[in-house]
Image (cartoon, rainbow, N blue to C red):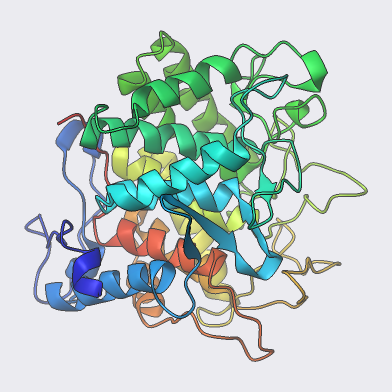
Length: 421
């Protein structure tokens, strides 16, 4: 039942005087939640009622975790996984997203089930990969790949720290020790077995894959500087200054990989921000990974507000570009200069350009940083968007659904820094 899912979660209404009945959006805030402890509710500012927001938020959570098209599945007595349905697997991306959602919604039962499945089937307990998680498994736990993907560890650690802050460490899982173990093992790799540190130590930037070949470049959508700020405050791993440096380096890097005319980023890039050229891996254009960049920048603005001038300029640039393409028709893949892609990257068994919900969601979330009037149109368009099959029958309950929920959490003020009780 929906009521059960949200017994411990209450939607917070508008928390600032800018939430006027005339639907006038206020200007972006000048301080982040690390300093103020408060969060904007852009839906309230745009005129939506608390009841409407509460019902919609509950519905999005229900769709992912209990509905007929759910992506969350409980197995055995105490385990659960989140599946990328269209690709028939379980990924550290989705598992770590599930952990973050569970701790944000105060759902310890879901969090612990997902963590136990990840420990049992995905995390390496010995060998060169010890501490890292195999990035893809079959739903029975069989590994499709032994290697990790760095964004999974990024979310795992942050979600575990939040779990420690929210629930403590004496209820069966010592969340903080688990986070520290991942960090300690990830940052002690010396290249044995071609396994490297999570962070490229020359550039202080997250790797695409912490293996020899993936250590040499990065993925713009893996850059969430505010997560390093969380680690600096509460990981208690002796690396606080290093994590703060990583946050600053990550913000500087984003300046270099964003196209100045479109705001688009490549899926993969060199550490200097230039698109990554690989014959066998489509990565130099704006595609599925890069949908997340606007939302990540909005999160950093909301929490840290440490790069607000550039982030506001970025938000205007990407929304202006998409608006010119058509608010209800912009597609989900471009060359970073805004020109059409030569080759369309397929999703599951489908290959087509779409007005994809995941990108609609992220492009609306970046309204948190914007000043122009277009932001309300993006917010309203996202509010009215539904996760239903596209004209060709393609349907993505997993990626579109997760980004839809994250964006709604951002825009309603419900994606929060969880500080120690």
